[in-house]
Length: 86
Image (cartoon, rainbow, N blue to C red; front, side, top):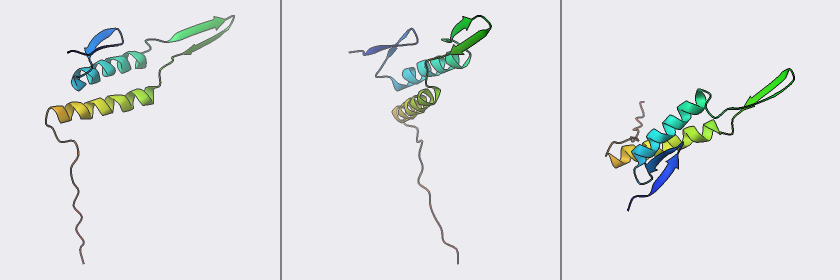
């Protein structure tokens, strides 16, 4: 069964972390380039804002990229070795 979710107007299979990561990156790009910005003007004053939390979105993208790499068998973390020199 396919679990479809809508991300930024596109239907994406929620069980495919690579597809979710790609859709989230497209959403991030649109937000960064000014998409979804609301502007209000009153006489000489204009205020614009967006309701997105960009740092949380970037964390979510990183999480799904890690899941995508794990699904493809790519290692993302490596053990570090310490060596003491006298």
